[in-house]
Image (cartoon, rainbow, N blue to C red; front, side, top):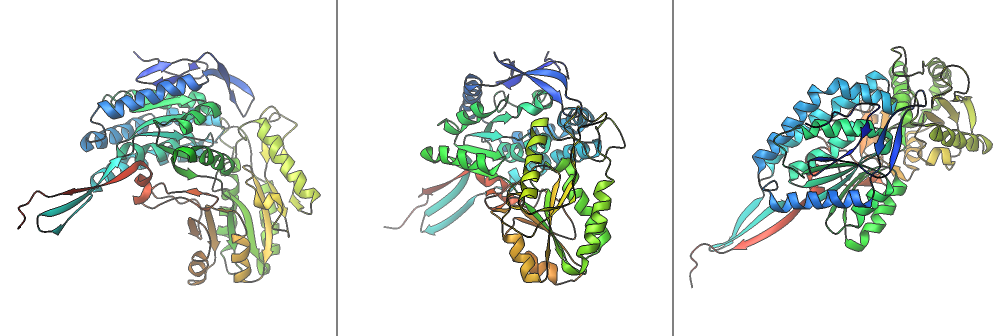
Length: 489
């Protein structure tokens, strides 16, 4: 009988259908209180090697890559199990990751549709065939690439695991998943849920909690042809460079610096309500966090006044308090990092409209809490404008014309997402077509649909997840030419 991982237990890896320990262990911490909630095994090269070997055996020796019906049944089964265990996942996600309960429920709710949609995609991959000469035919089939290495960040581990795992399994790949140490207890619960699927062949899914050593092994291993990585642009560049020697295939969803563009004719009540959410959801620890606010001059003063009031009244606190509207950052090291970026911006010309910052007094001081901060800037080259903060820090810039708004929005190495606010029927779509971003919301933010692609332009990544394109990273095309018919001489 498998052990049920719970807080205060020793969370372990799930490799080749068995729980696997490591020599080195770490502590799981509640970021809202700084208290220890358990310990976990830290994966190393040996752990990663065993996981890759298991995945490779499963790919070669089982019929997983050919059995579409089985793959579809497994994906639906996993969706059923996550749906059944949704509340335990929500509670543990809130405890270990710090998300307030509505945000944790939102994250968990994203995983089930992703699995079910990919189950449907399995039967849409029909390949192609053509007769191009008398008795001469060509077939194009798409085959699973092999073992897929999947690297998941700590900010949204449930949703982002499903987002990469679902298309990998649908394609027929076997997998080694590197999960982050910051969510080790949750990783173990996810592994437990997956392990209870009696349909899933042994070795198809392997889950390892670890950091750089595990990821480096996956990138360098000749037995792992595909890497699906979600994380920072800096790490994405580094692993792409390391994998280039083996012509490794990478699907990369990297950093973002989402501009929210508010025109004079926007519905300000809706725009500012959504701006607050775009900044504070997941405490700003989200690749699509609305971190750059571009405001047309006619409404700039009203936006300043109302946004200061909204953000200053935000109730921050632990997920255990139902009144909490925003939880902590993942740890105090990130609190210090974010605050250092704000201080640097202030020294270099930014003006604090609302100087939030670290909570250092009172009952929240033991946690990693950071109050929302609003900075007005005129220099788009400041690091606070150009670099991903990964915290609740918003910059505000004023623009005059539509052309200037587009120029400011595109003045970034990132291109993951953007949001446009206007009551004009033509302007938002006109602007959207000129924005260098993979997702553009009009009068909205963070609407994600499994049937439509998600991914970034420029330094925000390579490839796409969700939608019809999501299986491309995990498949190879094979052209077969055959001559079965009788041909005339």
